[in-house]
Length: 239
Image 1: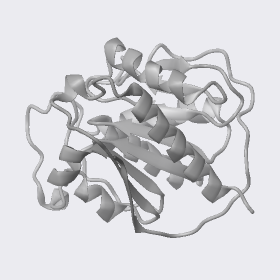
Image 2 (image 1 turned 180 degrees about the vertical axis):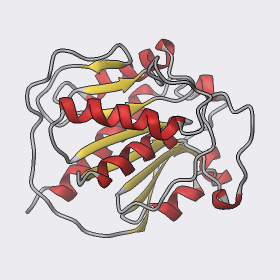
Image 3 (image 1 turned 90 degrees about the vertical axis):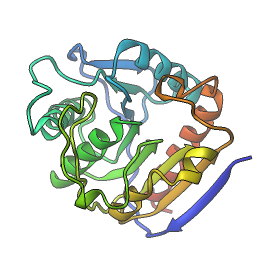
């Protein structure tokens, strides 16, 4: 069983784009999960610390989505950045945005954040929007944000992701999650900052832990990612 819940809606249209030829030089922290295809790529910010084992898991999903568009994953932190910096999220996102615009010259952009990578994905979308770029859609897979995030104080010792208070953004957002995550409403805060269409997609089952985020769900997740891409691009392609 899978529920599709439409929570609020706006309409936007724009021109269709295909993905131009790829610049061959990329930094080591930008990993081609699925390099084939000429359509606009999906830019993936992984969960956890963004290690190789995480990206291998994401590459399986990317391959199942298809070979019509590339998938690129960020191996979390560029080596020149210090995780202890208070502006780590914004500084990292700025490097991500620079590389994204080097490879995809213009929007609309498709941005996919997983678990703790959701904060970075949102900051990437924010910085792209501030540059005048169009965001086709943002997908967050089980990325937690409490409704009272604005009143929370930064905590010391956050190893995977520093404190982040996202700004409202006029983008379309899809929240992907299992039934248990949905029951706990752990992504509720994201609905407050997404000013476009918010879609909640619920998959059966539960997630027993970050290391089991996919737990043999790769085909199911790939189906949902593919549907998100189709919905997102349908909204930015004129009739």
